[in-house]
Length: 121
Image 1 (cartoon, one colour):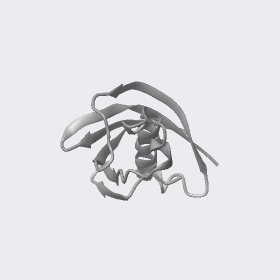
Image 2 (cartoon, one colour):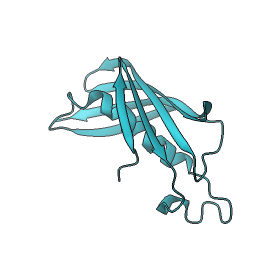
Image 3 (cartoon, helix red, strand yellow):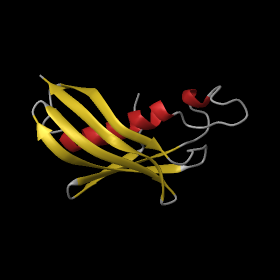
Image 4 (cartoon, helix red, strand yellow):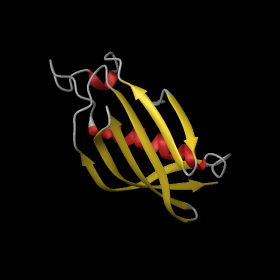
């Protein structure tokens, strides 16, 4: 399930985005009459954006999200919102890559955290 609309690398940072349409499967029933993008989906989006930074290293391999630390949810993400993710590598220790990721809606921090991704051949 691809949860990014577009992505572009800018120096050592990946900038990716997703616009919440309102008809996504993950909004159904979460919460009735008050659809909010679930935190686990925001984490998946951050993980996908982070993986784009290591796509060359991961060619022909499988990437696994192996850890999430200091995940914080600051503001809701709602239908119609465009969330922009900024991700960067903070450390590598093959096969592990450590990332800092943040997601913003209208320049306001909505989600942030650190992720560990393993690249397994």
